Structure formats: structure tokens, C-alpha cells
Length: 322
Ligand code: ASN
Ligand code: ZN
Image 1 (cartoon, helix red, strand yellow):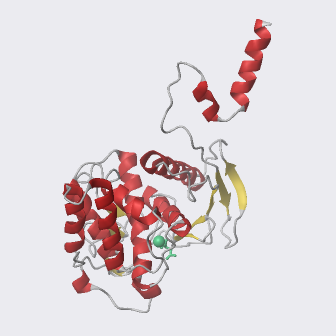
Image 2 (cartoon, rainbow, N blue to C red; image 1 turned 90 degrees about the vertical axis):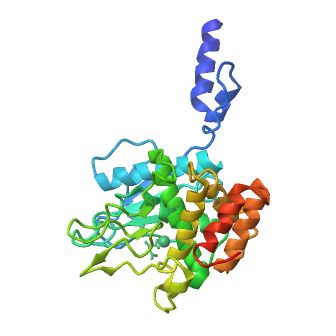
Image 3 (cartoon, rainbow, N blue to C red; image 1 turned 60 degrees about the horizontal axis):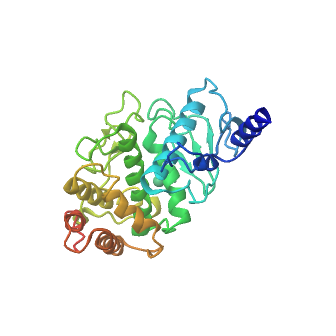
């Protein structure tokens, strides 16, 4: 009878969800153990067709293809970050499976979220290396999914630049969290290592010093402003979504630097709650978003708190006074 009990117990243990184990004695509840990622990596084999052929599923062994295995690992880190920092269960908050297609197209110089999944090019090797390389690129694209399921910021003009900026903010925070870096230790670069060796530059964007990431004969100069005085009016790039995002990016950096410590804990929490709290309009402009972050900080820390003052300081520093 005892043997049968053990067998049944073992069976129960191995066949039920991880949360079941919590009821066993001597196993303290772990705050980061509830959510389980469900990753699929597909290979487009240099065609521009989605999703491609599945080459690695959740729990499957490494393939030996760096693009596949890095995409898988960075999805895992991104999933773990949102769970550990904000108790979010995947992109939609409800365990959405995460799908990524790698080797998309030939010499394809971009990565994107298409509304359902992530897609990565290999880069052309002259301007860009593989887009699966930098962790913050995966964090950026996946955060477009989070924004889609929450505030739904329209991808044009200032709401679009906020959408872009939120992807940079959480992309950078994921990298900082993974490296265990405080706000003053972090580089605040997006896509470091993505520029090919001969390109004059360090990254795609700098949140700390927008406009300084690269200056290259082929790529041109980093066009990002870091202050409203230099706001770029344009019809290109959906009204400059990848350009003017420099302004809210720097507002976040200034806020995080003023607070100090791990940026994902306080500044990140304010931005996250603002994004996901259900009160932000999908057409919010910089001023509206800034006011919303101030309201969030006030709710979290109080009107007279240093954190709330830091938020005000961050936006004031980029010419969006509160
Ligand atoms: N990598 C770009 C982005 O995520 C792709 C795009 O412009 N849609 O913003
Ligand atoms: Zn983006």
C-alpha cells in the first residue's frame, strides 16, 4: 500500500501544474514560480513568409542555430522579467504563447512585431548584424505586444512615439534586469552590437543622449531629439515615431536617474502601471502621458514623495512641463 501511495504521489507530482506543488509542506511559495512561458521559434529559411517552419518548441533542446537559440533564450528572459518585475503573465497578461520567426527574408535589416508574433531578420552584415542578437531588441518587439493588449497607443505622431518609447523603456529595463545593473550602471543604449563592425556608431538609439547613437556615411546621423525644442515634424516614419521617441525616452532616463537604484523597480513600475492601468487614452500625447505618469506616481508613492518629484523632473527636463 505504501508503495502504491508513493507511485501515485509521484504521478500526481509529475503530471499536474507547477502551482500544485505549493501545497506540499516544506516548499515555501515562490513569488516567481507561477507562470510558465510557451515559446515557439519558427524558421522562415530566408523567405518572407510567416510563420515558417517550427524548429524549436517550449522545452525543446538547443538547435545549434544561434539565431534560433538566442531568440528562444531572449524570449525566456523577457517573459521572466515581466513576471518578476510586474507579475505579468506573458504579452497579454494571460499566458499568451510567444512565437518568433527567425531568418526572415534575405539580408533583412529589421525586426518587428506583426500584431501576433515577433519576426527577425539576419541583417545584411554591412549595416546590421542579426536582429536576434541584442536582448533589448527582443524586449522592444515583445513590448509592442504588451502595448497592443493594454493602452493600444495608436502608431502615429506623439501616441506612436510613446508606443515606440515604451518598447525602448522596457527593452532597456529587461537588459538592465538581466545584467543586474542599477540606473547609473546601465548604458541606456538600444541595440548595442546590432551595428556592423565598420559602421560609425554604438547602437540604434541612446535613451540617455538621444541623437548620439551613430553618425555614419551610409546610415546618416541618429535623428533623435532629446527635448521638445527639437521636436521633428514629419510625415515619414508614421509621423516620426522612431524619431521623437527620443523625448519620452530621455524623460524616463532622467526620472530613473533621479530616483537611483534598479530602474525597473520604481520608475519602471510607474511607467508600467501607466501603460497597463486602463486609464491611458490610445491617442495620448506626450503631455497626456506625462500627466498620467505623475498621477500613477502620486497613487503609488504619494504627492510629496521623492519618486513623484523625480517624475516631474524627468518630464520638465525634456520640455514637457507638468
Ligand atoms: N523594429 C521596428 C520597430 O519595432 C520595426 C518597425 O518600424 N515597425 O519599431
Ligand atoms: Zn518599435
